[in-house]
Picture 1 (spheres, rainbow, N blue to C red):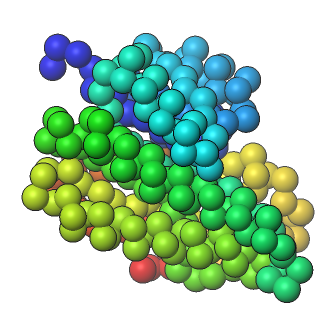
Picture 2 (cartoon, helix red, strand yellow):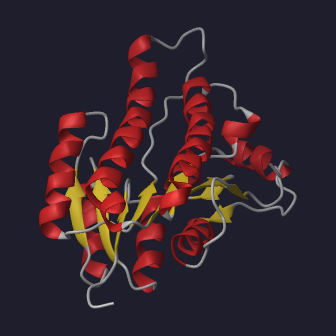
Picture 3 (cartoon, rainbow, N blue to C red):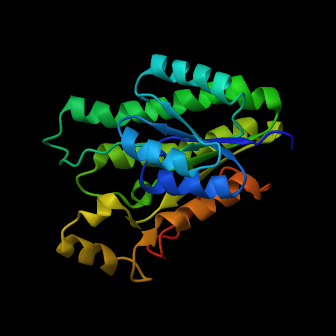
Length: 242
């Protein structure tokens, strides 16, 4: 290939997103790191990547997504793989959560739908091939108290994956989900010890996963998987089998 294929990872500056950026760069992709607020971490990551670049956008704003897609066209000229990793969560019981809190979670899900549409329209449909990998969550299947909007969004993301895969299968554009369980990231590192112990008691392998273990699956679906489509791949140490 005369020019490197391009992978865009949303929420790529930290955690699972950052691990996906590094892993896809190892696979030879030119990686676009999307971020919204974690600019310092994103720029540090971009400096590590061969020919990596950053794009900033609020995914709850469709105008911002349009501007980002235009920037992608100018900077990279193509998007071969889209990893929809960005998400947002508010921890609050159903009865005390307000509409603003709910909307802050749901708007990012709408952004995932809209960004996927624009990347398909501007890049993948014209090329006649592509891969979309959505990062959902085990809690979209098991539920989790205090996270009603988040679990709704993650369950919906897997349904989105299955429906879109069926729409696009005849065009050689494959769509899959990766549903991580409890992963050792900055977010879980801040949990109290007693909460961590409760989590570990639910995982047959007795440990949290790593962001790199999730990124390995994303890389496989982005590169070598040619007959896996509309599938949710669970990465959770055996706590849920799907």
